[in-house]
Image 1 (cartoon, rainbow, N blue to C red):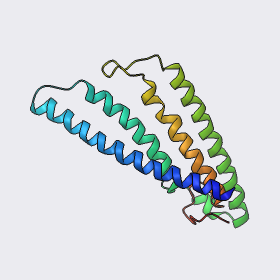
Image 2 (image 1 turned 45 degrees about the vertical axis):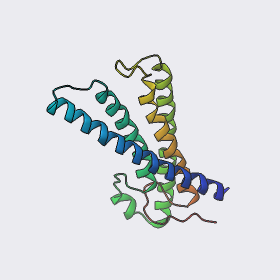
Image 3 (image 1 turned 180 degrees about the vertical axis):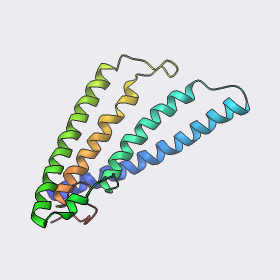
Length: 167
């Protein structure tokens, strides 16, 4: 079971890297085109704003999942670090559970919003608005994979120590 979770967690991490690289490169190209055409050629391109908004949503939510795996999210742990070891472990598991519940709620809410908004069409691109709103549940799903991976590494969410799966 642990080996399967590690494989899925590692694959999600690799997939995030690919997605982030492609999206960031596309975003740089689109924004460069937007600036060039708008300010230098005085012929703004209508589609660049919508594509940039769509790509930025994916960059934020997939990037948030990757940041979770790398324990890069902002964390206030002054009280947590002051606790005795056993109390710290209990609090860590409570935080892990709260994190998973929150992530699952965001997956549900994001999926419902994407389904309800699927009929809305972006005016210039003429694609469903759900192309943008699906970034939330997909990013949260990737976060959930990493949160489960933390449990199998016997590491708490946000704890930067130890990155090895326990066999």
